[in-house]
Length: 99
Image (cartoon, rainbow, N blue to C red; front, side):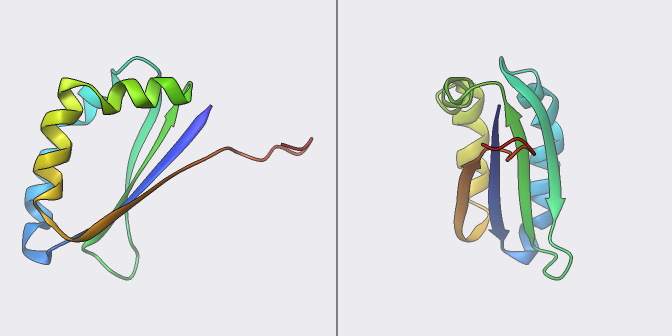
């Protein structure tokens, strides 16, 4: 499983716009092949900073989503609301038995 975290900093006046956009599309994202989990987090100290936290069965599943028509609609609309570039990274959970 691949975990993807995307940290996004929005212009404060566009936070409500982002939340509407996210809520309109979150179930469609969750329904993408290979998506096992999607959550939205808000920074505890900086209220215009959010992170998406998602689980993907494989790196290929994430890449397929990133090349989908849905991503092609959602991501450009989201980026227009940013005040700084997003930071995205993928991680793997470290289990008690090693890597």
